[in-house]
Image 1 (tube, one colour):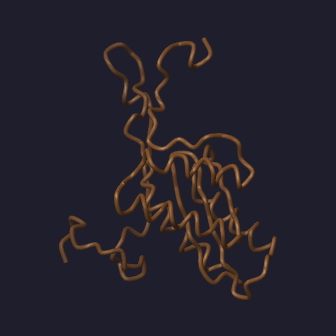
Image 2 (image 1 turned 135 degrees about the vertical axis):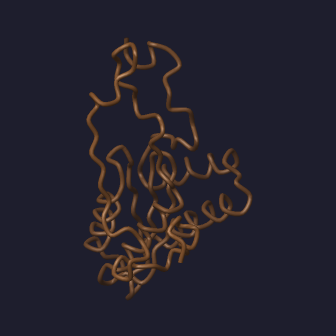
Image 3 (image 1 turned 45 degrees about the horizontal axis):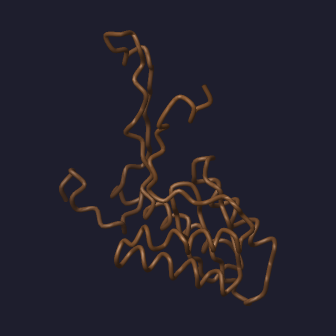
Length: 172
């Protein structure tokens, strides 16, 4: 097996040595000063949304009483559809699914969890549209509708530019 990660297929486990068993990084901003004595901001930090969605779905289905989960991740919202094993509404399972998703995501994400078959189907439909034809503009309306149905009035950011356009955008 080559050590450049080109043979990683996603089925490795830490016990078998296929993936890194730990992650470690030490950062001291003093080591990264530029000529102007400014510390550069980390512009290359990103979230791999498909991998995050996959991990959340896998973790949620491990919870007791969960049969299946569907997860959709945008730039600032996570939608989790949960199917229980007995097919009944269970607030405790929904709470645990939310806590599981929140535990592995940055805090600026809003996590929305449902066990409604209708909403889970909508999450699935939007996710499949994005996967097959990358129709970002076409699904914005569907995402806003999904948010409203789940009780959130804020519009989702889908690949929006998060950099402020002027000083007034950041409160100066």
